[in-house]
Image (cartoon, rainbow, N blue to C red; front, side, top):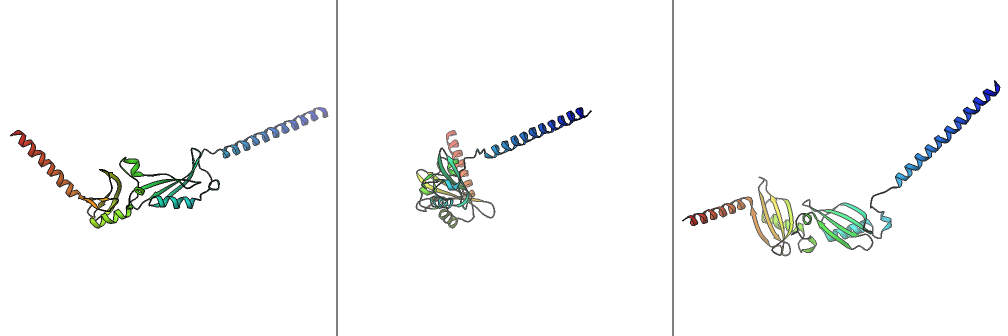
Length: 212
């Protein structure tokens, strides 16, 4: 009986030892797995300590290149080049993104929302007047609050198209030359409707003359 008891006790001890080894192995595997997952990083972002320019220096370069307040800054690796992507927002709400080389400070690209949407758009850095100066000229020419501002090339001339909305909801568009500040055109909704009516009348008269 004593021999059988010893065998049973010995077997139980071995079983407990095996369970302990298996349990520790599972715990080790789980711990190793979690550390590997935490080490995986698919993001292209890089730490500021790895580049020459500080974030503030990049912001200073970007705001000297384009007008607006800083909305977002990202430091990323683009095709092996460290780049600060700085998003600026103007008073009218339009966005401009400036890409600055994070080591030598070169402005690699300046792109606004208008440029993405319209191939005739040009960069504010290529004209004499700032967007705010064009807005001041437009609001002195016509009443209303600024609804939208676009900087475009029209027949080779750089033009700010400033859209104003009055208190009663009517719209007026003021075209301002982006270099010398000349007001090229001011057209309200009423003016546009009248012009369209005149064009329709001219077409009717032309058709009547053909019938005769």
